Amino acid sequence: MTVLSSLAGRHTTLSAREVDHLHRLLGEWQLLSDLAFADLLLLAPVVDRSAFVVLGQVRPYPAQTLYPEDMVGAVLDSRDRPKAAQSLGEKRIVSEGDPEWRDGTPIREVTIPVMLEGEPIAVITAEQNLASARTPSHLELSYLRAAAAIEQMVAEGTFPFILEEEGERELSPRVGDGFLEMDADLRVTYASPNAVSAYRRLGMTTNITDERLPDVAIDHSRIVDGLDNDTPVEDEIEMGGAWVLRRFIPILLGGERIGAIGFVRDITESRLRDRMLLVKDATIREIHHRVKNNLQTVASLLRLQARRLGTNEARAELEESVRRISSIALVHETLSRESTEHVEFDRVAQRVLEMVESSLVHPDRPVRFSLEGSAGELSSEVATPLSLILTELIQNAVEHAFVDRGGTVTVELKREDPKLLVLVRDDGEGLPSGFAIESGSNLGLQIVRTLLIELAGEITLSSNGGTTVELSIPLARG
Image (cartoon, rainbow, N blue to C red; front, side):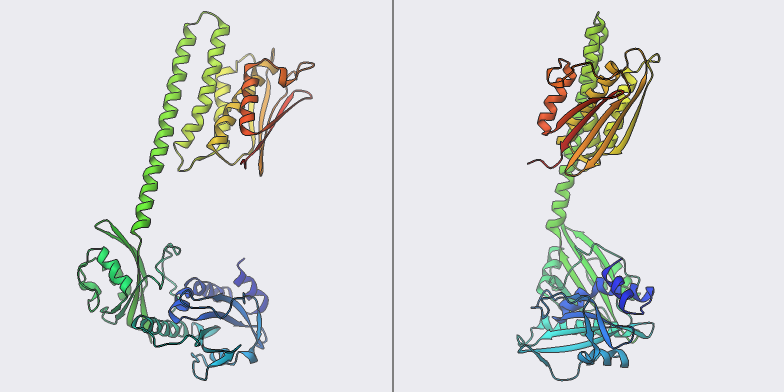
């Protein structure tokens, strides 16, 4: 549940549909705050209408805030907010009156009723610091006109747009990017310097001011269609190696489109970085793919060599080496399919079990394998040696725990950040009397100990109706 939903449920009688409308408003109102150079508070009347609860707050990027403190959740006496109460009661924007002096600062307050289906459900207070007031520039005047228009749309219930497509809001153009102001005929009446520069990057040699969007050489067909249907549009255009993100919003008053505003952002550098990352990612995956192929080739050569050997012992040693190489290849195979340097280790562990089962288990000594728990994603630096460790421990269990019978081998993975626990259990004969891993001459266990040192991990062995090997591996290493 969001903060807005929680506050509305605790203090107000707002319906789910009304809360949804306010959620859409909060998703868009940074635009209004920036255009108006004003702090915005979203107020909703409490159940008995004697006070307002603050459901939302936004500060302007281009101006100094009047509210450094967080106001969300505060309950304000309606007598201290007479303009908000007036807007709610009269269903209109209230902007008249002298500036309010607060701590020596003159503040202009405008209150806007948030309308839904003809009824006010909340009030926006827009408060602007007049202490730094000066003669506004052409750009600032355009901003203020756009802000006034959007305020009127909120009061008429036509903003925010219900049918607007959700884009990448973190990339969506902002007020500080290029700004365009248009009349009802979609003729550009003002273009900020950043907007002119963005269109120049797209190859437009003339100033876009006084041009109609449908007549501009640069494609605006999707934007024009959207505005003609009273719908905001966001798109991305690429021309001549330049990328520009565009967002256009119709200005609707009294049910008629009287103009539009547009925002354009030059995202060329961002898209070039994205392309470079894609190339780098593809290169890394190709490297992993080739390493996997090379390891599989080495494993195949060792298998051929094993078939030519005359002794079973030498053949078994080579087959163990094949399994070790194959376990490393499994990690590289997984990495070759991913877009990061992390792998879902559960899949690797399952493949290791299948590999050992297919190469070591005999019908006269059936061994069942199971995988429990989850390790989640592991970096390749951890996954590669761990896959080899797991291979060695499972091999040991199959070869030494079940001398004249079958049994069960269970691998359990436990993610307990910042460490990973790995348990390999069997129900075989158990450890020999006096066994110590430090003095064991088994090559597989020596490999396990060496790789655990690399991972800064620990190993413990216990024997009780079988053998349990527990590994503790830190995941956050310096």
